Image 1 (cartoon, rainbow, N blue to C red):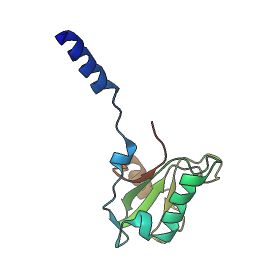
Image 2: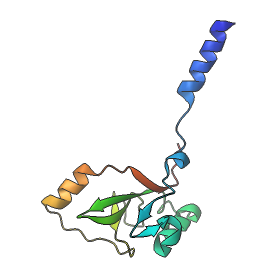
Image 3: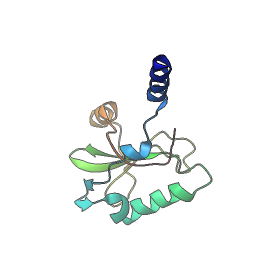
Image 4: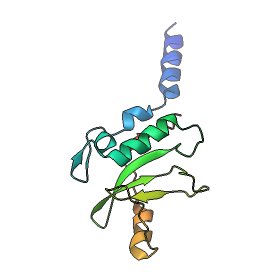
Length: 123
């Protein structure tokens, strides 16, 4: 009986997957705004589209990163681009047209994607 208990506990431990909702940062300050997911209109709208869109264009995640000391929002959503891997936005929601140079390549190489703001990908 004791062995059965150990097997069940072990099985439960290894079968538990982290909940993506638990990884989302809700106490973030970005662009001098607390909780940008709700308080930046363009970001809130993007998240709403992620929740309701059936086209898969808004399936993915949104992270907060720093690029040249500025807050940058990074998403891996398609956004109708035909499959571009990542999109970058400034605080006003403008797409960043980042020229590929050494600083950008360094940014991409060292992106940590630690501050998850939103995800509709559930594993």
